[in-house]
Image (cartoon, rainbow, N blue to C red; front, side):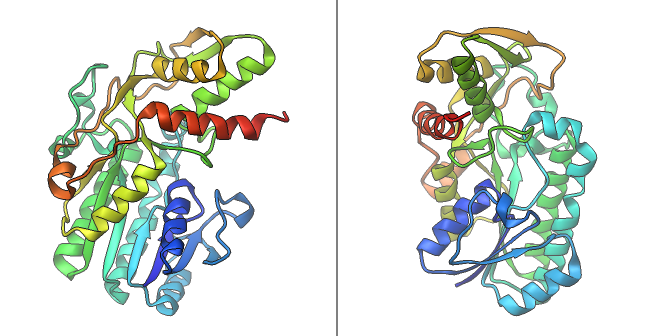
Length: 322
């Protein structure tokens, strides 16, 4: 198949591209970043540096590619700090989604995958650390805590009606905090697992075992290892399910617990300086996997400790000569 991966220079897109190439598909990757800044560069792919929001150059790419499947991972995003402090920029990702949707109508790929986010969920459902796991219907009525989530929710509906009114197969997954090796671990866009590991490794190296913690550390999340994410994307694309669906782990942990786990891998005891003024996001968020089990007969299953240890070892290798 001819496959287009938007945002394929990013973390999730890079791993999906690797999987598609391994399975002998013809892959075109579009990403706004210079290739030196891509998380992975696949020489077997047609790698294009391009802003996916720009209609005319993307029209040329769609025309030449004759794509069977399009995977849209492209957006401006990062961890809670980035998304809370750069809401305008995150909201502009809507331009990528409208451009892609219009070109899908024109060139009619057989299937489109849209990567949504657990950030679409109504913030009133996430007010305590032990909040009930979020089921797909909890996104409505709409009240995400960030513009990033509201943009994702609008784009879900856009792609849903793209499928319903234009006869294109659309799949929509709400990702819950994907992590793993090759991900960002510094610079402001990193998510909690990588940030926790980096801070613990810095403490280990410096000998000062005090670690800065955003918030009181009791806020909770679930985290899905990248291998589970790729499997889930593929299984969803192979299914006939067209509504938005959770794709995430249902193993809940506090942010402090995440840091403690990283400290255990490092073999050190840490103490925390709690910054209650730092961005924290909602109080608690977990994935209800009832629907994905019904639809796919599968759900993410890689234990957090297993994925975190692999991620810890990779980040430690990147930081060893600093």
